[in-house]
Amino acid sequence: MSKYDKYINLSRPLSKKEKMPIIKRAAQFMSFDALEGFKTDIRKKGIVLDEKILLSDEEIEKINSFLYYLTRNKDLLINICYYDKGYIKEISNKKVKKINTYENYLILEDLEKINFNDIVDINIVE
Image 1 (cartoon, rainbow, N blue to C red):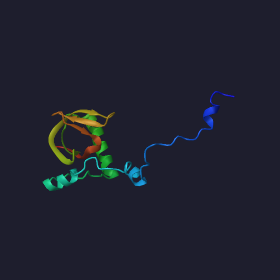
Image 2 (image 1 turned 90 degrees about the vertical axis):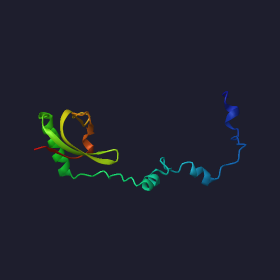
Image 3 (image 1 turned 120 degrees about the vertical axis):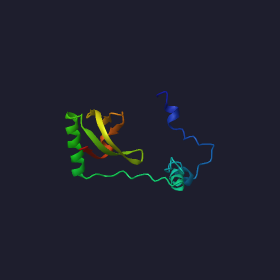
């Protein structure tokens, strides 16, 4: 006889609380809008955020090859168009200070940091 035999055949203890209805239990796990009312407020104020542009494979390849070219020729002035915090930004006549291919970003001479995935278009100033 083990020391736990007296506990094995006991009935399950009953809770003294009332059971929560299934609908209320399900409500605990429903999704919610963390920024409740944010989209409505934005619409009221007339602020329009730009949609992030999805690039084709050819455009991505063009940008990648251009970035590779810039790793070797940082003295060139470039124009760059990129997505930043809901808006499309355009910067003209800037030099690249640093390109980090490991973490996928570039830094312009004015210390603007741009992620490769946010670049929409990039070209050399002629």
